[in-house]
Length: 168
Image (cartoon, rainbow, N blue to C red; front, side, top):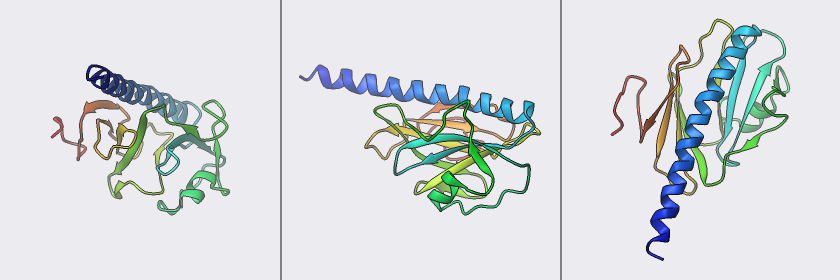
């Protein structure tokens, strides 16, 4: 039994690492779609339900929303639809993983309710860090840093600023 627990832990951390790397691809694809299709896209996270989604704006107009209101962000009846290329509804995080929170410059760390990261037609996005953790854990295993240029990178551990290069 003592051998099985470390093996399970190793598999779980590999799954978290794999999930973080998959999100790098998702960020790149969403950013490219925003530019190529000349539309605002966003990746959203619901921390309570442990889900994520991709939406696109119906009409290009100014974004107004309450970042703390989960339902208005996810359902946003005004101007965002689920981008069917990605999914028709919110998608559960892979088993054993969760998004612990999202840090956004200007808003700080968001860990309750929902958070969204916007990607704009000019190729820029909201500077953000997504924290991935083992399900049931409150400690980030990996950080996905997304600067305004969209060149996402995965770093081990907790990265607290956009300029930090080594996790503490």
